[in-house]
Image (cartoon, rainbow, N blue to C red; front, side, top):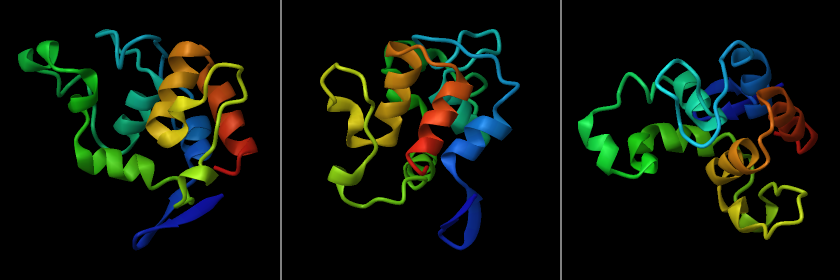
Length: 131
C-alpha cells in the first residue's frame, strides 16, 4: 500500500518495515550495536538515507541518541502517519501507561525496546493500525 507524501508516493511504514528491512539484523536498547544490528527506528532512518552507525562521531557518545538523527529524517519518519490529531495516533495495546503515543518514533522505540518485538511483529502491528 502506498501513501501520498509531499510530491511522491511513499510506501506505508508497515511496508517499509516488512519488506525493506526484513534482512536488517535487530538490536534492543540502543540505535545500533556497532556491528550492523539496528533497532527499528534506526533501521527506518537508514531506509530514509541516514545511517546512525556510519554517521556516529565522538560527540555522539556524550549526546543523547535522539540528537543523532537529523530533523529532516525525523520529519520523514513522522510523515508516515496520516493523522494530524494526537488523539488519532496509534497506541500500543500493552498495559503500561501509553505516554509514548505522541510520536511514531516513541512508539517504535517502545515496541522495539520495551516489548522487544521483532521487525515482523512491529510491521504486523503497524499494518493492523492502517499504517
